[in-house]
Image 1 (cartoon, rainbow, N blue to C red):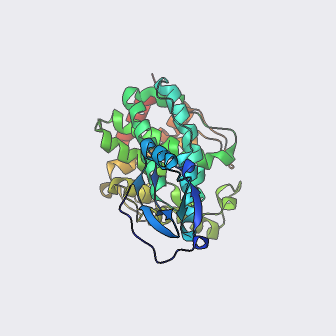
Image 2: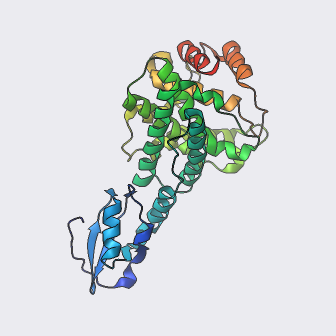
Length: 322
């Protein structure tokens, strides 16, 4: 139990119940939880508290079926519950099958991510997904060959980020990045790279025809919006750079800062290729998907050296083509 503090208010009507059985082992709550002691509240756990099964069992055995939260933390608590109840990964699966499960979980995670603010529980779950993803790639970087796009373009928004994370991590591993933490920062950059699109109306994201100038301006704002959303998180600066600059191009024609190759981190260039490749191999509202060979050929003849790093491209080819 954390250090307890008495509260000036003893009115339970000022707080909301939070059943203890909604707290899960090895999860993190990013809101204060209070225990009711007689007519008073005592601070039980503060923001960023990590729970363990033994403590949760102890609370229930001592008769604490409910803890209490402030009304202003209801949204955070709802986000925590969604993240904490995402399916568990079956670690006994072969890397390719495990990666497929990670992508399914990641799609649900991204949908929840778009529905609320960035909280500690969200970042914690993203780190967990990134760790599983890195482990798969380290065991078999070729497991990304099993990734396929879906016909339902409405799901693209939610599946895209976790697939970009997988491709970018595989590219990095092939290029000689073997340190687990370095790979994890790249995976996290991929997971969060499009978080700014949560501020873009779905009517723009899923529009089947060309975007109007005003709509395009809104769409192009998503890297900056994503960077702002992650400002108060503990993400590594490399992950943040991926969020902000994944639409930059080597020749300076990208956005938001028109950076050229010498100003772009290698990790950003890896994520940019992963982003482009997944977009080309997925069904979108305005295009039919290509197979991996058609996508690689398109990149080779249309984007290489101007938009896409040659080294990153060759690494992706090595991961995808036996």
